[in-house]
Image (cartoon, rainbow, N blue to C red):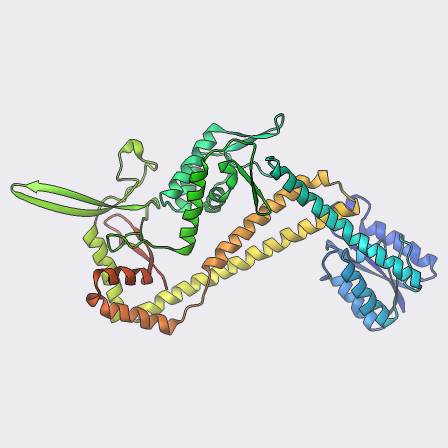
Length: 474
């Protein structure tokens, strides 16, 4: 039988501050020899946190214990085995004692071969977990205290602000603040996050702006002069860029978009149309022309950004033009009626959606894997701080960046999980769509409006030489 020398390091920083594999190995081998255990074996987990039990070397050691190959397990410190009291005691009772294996530490005064040693082990296990929990609690409490006092708790400075080291306050950057205000305005006008991001990105070189940036910006209370931490919102000491009413309206708009609410208005396609060029809202335009003694009424659909005076336009390059309302509606109705003649078209749309869902599930798995790595990195940093291998101040920026990355990943995961449901009953969908298609001409105007909203999520319009793109709801 052998003495198992178990070694664990959680981060590269530990290796640089005295908790390296070599340092532990040297101490454990010397301790083993001092006890007369010449026959020993090293079990090394490099880069694994002490709060997780899923460690390859630990599993291998447990297997060897159960096979009767080990008489004693030795660690440099108790927290090398685990930082959780529950896990330490479970290993001691369910693995070590069950297989008559002793447990020793090279630097701590306990010996599980004696009753006092077992009691001391329990005390040390409590302190190992308590110390780590206190670090996390101090970090959380510190942030909550700052927020309650109106102080920004740090991290990446939000777009629109700069950090004044002397006053210890966030200060507005006028040029960026104007962009922030316009982002909120465009969002409330119905522009897509992608089109807003493209517009904003063209006006600043300071940082990358994409659709997720816009999503996060319109959700941050900091722009209305508030701070949030752990669900608590407090008034901040910094100056607001937008007023509270605008921020509240933006949250209502976000909720409406998530719920997929479609307004049934005066016209058949009200609330479903959007500009395929710039992502803007579509407006209904009426024009009256008199020729001789006759009056001619024309109705069009146009991009809201195009149908205003040039000086009022938020986007300069929209080229949608004016599309006859009757032509657009006729195209959409014909697409619906085609389902009666070509029922296989419904299945093709469902299959296409399922392919998209499969891709989203793959993206979701990738994001979850990234989130897992970020969480492991945070755990490792907390472990290293708790062990005294590094100072909290030395890695505070790293922790903030990891926490920001975690928040961003969690938000992206929420979005994908919300929109990646593959729960489509193909036979029921085909039957429903076919029935609507066959009965279309017998519906009242209100029934047609309701039916079309069951079938269609949105319709993107393009210039006259291109067909509208329909995003089907099934």
